[in-house]
Structure formats: structure tokens, C-alpha cells
Image 1 (spheres, helix red, strand yellow):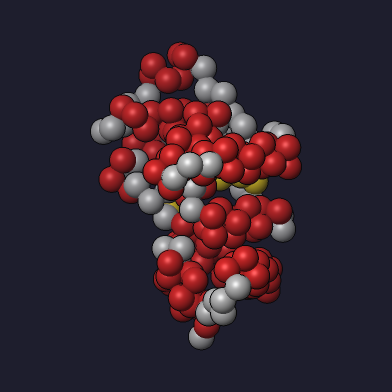
Image 2 (spheres, rainbow, N blue to C red):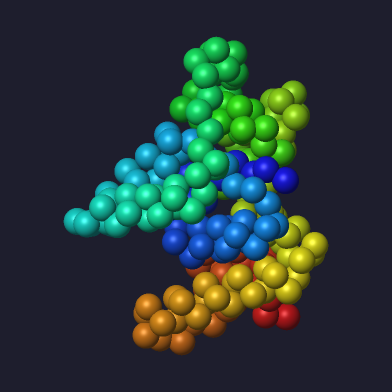
Amino acid sequence: MKVLLDACVLYPTVLREILIGAAAAGLYRPLWSERILEEWARATVKLGPGAEAVARGEIAVLKTAWPGASVAPGAALLGRLWLPDPNDIHVLAAAVAGGADLIVTFNAADFPRHILTEEGLDRQDPDQFLLALHDASPEVVSEVCERVRAEAERLSGERQEMRALMKRAKLPKLGKRLSG
């Protein structure tokens, strides 16, 4: 399964690490575009000095690890598509150009299902997506989340409870499933 990851799900570190960990475990193939990666880098500016440089380093590592994940939609495709927010057309175009099955995004209103269906696509928020992966491969997703939790604990120097970490990552249902 090919999945286009929107910038809003790549920007938060814990969420990105879980999504990419699940892809690295072979549960799906991630896709993005250069513009999506640029949106992620620019979003970090609000975190303060140096944050954008860190994000660009993380992007370079991601691009090296996933050389076939970047999709470049052509101008004709961009011109043919329509969405309520014209600034999101590039996301839909990248999904179509990459042959994605799904767009993972928090922005449901910007990607109406009837428009996505016309292009052979669906959308899910990351919590829904990761729950579905967990249902199919519970041990794998649990292991990925545990690795991310342990790394968050190591970096923070403080105990990180799984459910609380998942809630902060906007994955409350997955957190409940992993803790239950």
C-alpha cells in the first residue's frame, strides 16, 4: 500500500517517527513531494532559532533512507485538480502522481472524500491509519511505538508513559489500544 504523508503529519517528531517506523517495518510505502517536505521545514521556524536547520537535517536523512518516496507531479496534473483550498492541490497531485492509495492528514475538510474517490484515493487521520496497521500487525506497531517511546524518554530524561505520549502526538485511540 502506498501512502502520501501530508506535511502536518511529518512535522511532529513523535508522530513522524511512528509513521516512518511502520513504513520501515514494511507495513506500507511512504510518499511525499519536495513541496510537502519544504512545508514541514518552514513550519519549524516558529519553534525558534535552529529549528529549521534541524528539520532540514531530518529531511535529508529521510530522503536518503527513502530515495523513491519523493513524487513530482506535473503541471498538467496540478492544473486539472480541484480542492476547496487551492494550497492543498499539490498534496492531492503528489498522491495521484505517486499512485497512492491513501492520504494521511489531519486536514479532513481540505480533502473531501468525493473528490478523492474520483482519483481512486481515500484519506485517514494518522490515528485511524495507525490503528488499522495495528489491527493488521499488532506486534509490529507495538514494537515501533515502544522504540519511539523509549527514545523520547531517553532524550527527555523523564519517564514517558505510552498513553500520554500518544495523546500528545494526537494518537489517543492508538495510545488507548497500546495501554489497554
